[in-house]
Amino acid sequence: MNAGKFSKDQEHRRSERTLQSVPVLIRGRSAGGNLFEERTQTQVVSANGALVVLTTTVMPGQELVIFNLLSREQKEGRVAYIGQLDALRIQVGIAFLEPCPEFWPEPGTPEN
Image (spheres, rainbow, N blue to C red):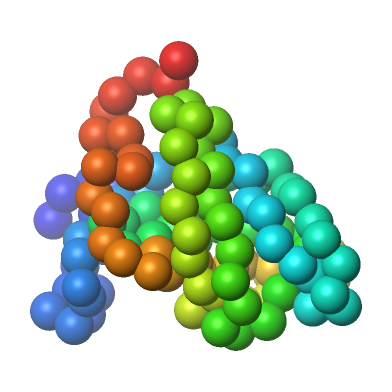
């Protein structure tokens, strides 16, 4: 198994997941309907989306925009997973509306 790669249930995944910290800006509406913009880092990335940590409450199926602060590109996605980390933070799995493997830097690429 390669370090930084997920293998659990890999045969059921649409694409390979990689542990990677990429600075991103998440934009959308909070669960209360207010516009929000939150800077965070990815925990896991794949051609189909990312896992991030947010302090803003979002809902499953909600549309969000991920702005990659390294490449200055953005991609639309939907909330596919929500998991409570602690009283203030949640893990949010965001699925791109269309796969985009080139959205994330290659593993091991230095941040600019």
